[in-house]
Image (cartoon, rainbow, N blue to C red; front, side, top):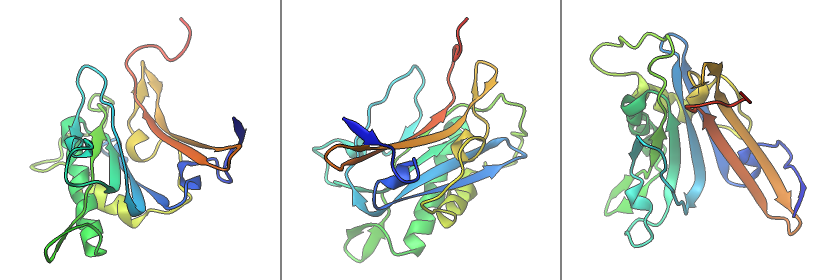
Length: 193
C-alpha cells in the first residue's frame, strides 16, 4: 500500500538515479536520459503499432549483459535513436560502461516518440541534432529536473493538445520507493469526447 509520495515526487526519489533533459526550441524536440549511478537491471515491454527502440533486445534475461548504465527517451521518431550515441559518448568520457577487456562500453537502451509534424524545423541538414542533445542531457543530469515541455516531452502532443514529460514517486508501507517517468505523446483522445 502506498504511504506517501517521495520527497521530490520524481523518479529520482529512487536512490541512484539522475535525470537529464536537453531540448531544441527550433526543432521542437528533445531527449531525456535516466542515468544509473550503478549498473541497473532493466526490462522492457514494447507495445504500439510502430515502436522505435535501440538495444532493447539486450534486456532479455538470457543475454550476456545484465545491467544498463542509462536509458534514453527521445523525440524525433527514428532520427531520435541517435540520442543514445551522445549519451554513450558522455558516459564513456566519464569512464562508465560494461567492461570488455580494456574497453568500457556504456549500455544505453532507448525508445523514441513521433514528434515530426509539430511545426518544428526538421530541415537540420545532413545529421539530426539528437546525438548532441543526448550528450547535453547527460551533462545536465541531476536529482532535480524540469517537467512539462522539456526533454523528450518538448514536442510531444496528444490529439492536438500539448503533451510533455511527467514523473512521480511513491513510498510503500515497507519503505520501498517506486518511481515513474513518462513522455506523453499519444494518438487518440486524452479528454472525454
